[in-house]
Image (tube, rainbow, N blue to C red; front, side, top):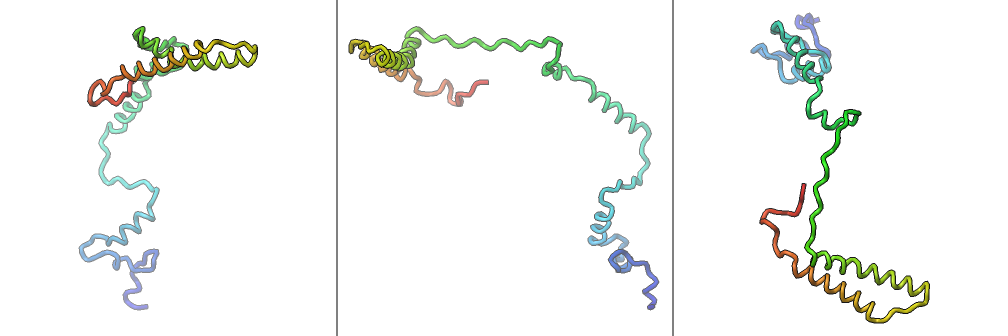
Length: 161
């Protein structure tokens, strides 16, 4: 054995003082090795813990466990929470309502007439079908003509909450 063999060796086989530079601080490799070896261990606290620190922590935990007033609103139990009523639906003007009836109702009426003709062999005059087609076209043109060309305000993207 040489005179350097009496020094303690670390897990890698290198002497301990080889990993500690002359300034007394461990090298970066030694610091990482200690971190890896002690992974999951609780670090040693070198400072004294001030008294009352843990009591304050327990108080905080108790405060968190208390029910919050906002949580009561979302509970689904027998406390009788009744959600607010939905907002009322907008009422269209009579002309707009007639236009929607023409756009949506006329095709449905034409389909019903076709089914009736197929089942009963009864024929309707051409003015009934022409009137339904005219109602559809008139309603469609009216809705397009009265549609606003720009949003209500420049930043309105149409989303409603």
